[in-house]
Amino acid sequence: MQIEQIALSDLLPPVYPVRRVADDDEMESLIHSISTIGLLHPLTVVREEKKYRILAGHRRFIALKALGRTSVPCNIIETSLDARGAITVEENLVRESVNPVDLGYYFKHLIEDEGQTQAEIGERMGKGQPWVSRFYRLTFLEDDVQVAVQRGDLPARGALDLSRIKDVDTRHTYTRDALLRGSSGPQIKNTVDAYMNYEHVIDKALQDAQGARDQVYAEAEPLRCTWCGAKASDKPGDMVWLCGECLRELLSARTGNSTVTAGDNGHEPEQVLEKAE
Image (cartoon, rainbow, N blue to C red; front, top):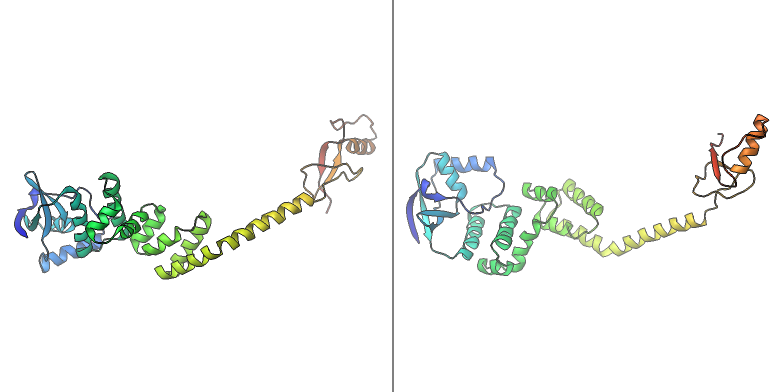
């Protein structure tokens, strides 16, 4: 291990920081710790032309600048471009409390921008592809769910379990319930498993209800003219309907004018009169 004192002006920030969201309280705590206790761990850097690129310790670098320091002890390593991402993640997992969503986006950067596979990342870190996939999948959740995970309101595993519910409205209902109850990851998993086991029963019940409603509509007696019984189409059943022929006769009888017309030439819906209470 090669440790050297390097000027802060010679250090370059990470190409893609693991932390996407800054926490002011945590930064203030780190600044206070360094000012009172000192820097417990050197930064990890790699040579890049005449400067050094930070692989791990970006927050410590920011804290030292805030304290007015001019240099910092650094662990200088020699590594390939592909291995840098794994070192950054490993260092941050050991020394920093990185939230799962930020880690997921860092894996997304390695996979989509640098062309690394989930299996390669997992192998370098000694974790395996499923471990990488779990964090990567967090980046595809709805924005409000990602925020809840970042804040610690919703466990990451629980958020992934909820994503198994395909129906959007149902998923949102279960998510709100988990947030209100403060459910743990295992509790959310059990709830989602129970839903998935009975999902086909619920879907069948909904389909049966829809079928019964359609049957009622199909068998409903069509509205007829109150006077002569001619059928009406698509008219509310709680109305009194008169066909054009009967309406003309009714209007003629009320006015005593046989020339009053309703504007049609047959038994077509002409006017709907509200039924008297």
